[in-house]
Image 1 (tube, rainbow, N blue to C red):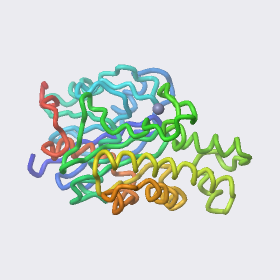
Image 2: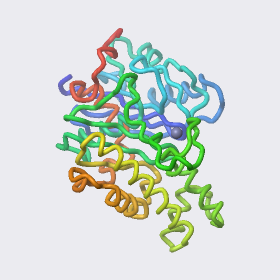
Image 3: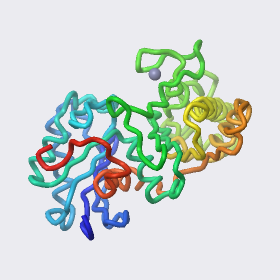
Image 4: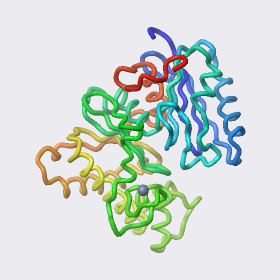
Amino acid sequence: MPDQTVLAVDMGGTKIAVGIVGHDGRVLVRTRTLTPTEPDAEVVWAALSDAIDALPDVERVGGVGVGCGGPMVWPAGRVSPLNLPAWRDFPLRERLQARFPGLMVRVHNDAPCFAAGEHWRGAGKGVDNMLGMVVSTGVGAGVVIGGRLVDGRSGNAGHIGHVVVDPAGWPCSCGGRGCLEAVARGPALAAWAVQNGWRASGDGSAHALADDARGGDPVAVAAFARAGRAVGTAIASAAALLDIALVVIGGGVAQAGELLFAPARRALHDHSGVEFLRDLSIVPSALGPDAGLVGAAALVLDGPHYWTSGAGAPGG
Ligand SMILES: [Zn+2]
């Protein structure tokens, strides 16, 4: 698709981001809006649809790439995001295909899109074997092996949030126990801190907790240390399995920077018994909040690396 632009969508439980991305991966225009909280699928669709219609030159795009919270039926693009209860088995790809007849429309999980974006144009550029990880309201990842995004059997490869880091740990929203996500998701950090005596400042979120940790609040620092250790432990397990060179981490909780990264690196070091794990790097996202849009565009603009399914072509 030479010289053509792509409509990119990053659909989350709290925010909807839409943008026009150039063939070189540059985000030419972007807007963000809050995801409606009404439990009505059509209200949420209308918000996305309005955001798309308001983009300049949207009728000139050559394809549509979408990252959305999972789980989903992939590659059909029927989505049931855990953090967006209004959509259950919502035919997102079908709706977009009807809005853009004849164009390629591809929908994937949001964390694999993040990984694709960072690998294509971000901190993982040129690294053939890596993990792109989002630590936010949820915890997810996308896996790149041999320079290609790995989808798995059902498009759900990379769910590192449900790797067990403490078999006796907290219950997880997935029904399991001791998953990484149950420790490291933003709300879990804040909840642990409150249980341990943190007097929630600001809005009581992980963002407020990070501010207090930077100010030296020992409980806040301990909350990030605990989450960071869990992140590093899960990375050690994943890396032992996959033999990767790099982990790129983004998402709201990762904005805490070294508060999270330093304990994650220490835990990785402590659990890196095998030699090939010892030079694994953990670095922050280079694309920041644009990573999801860039990765969604990559599904369409660089299909050979980021889209393995035969479906998603016009009418497919
Ligand atoms: Zn879980």
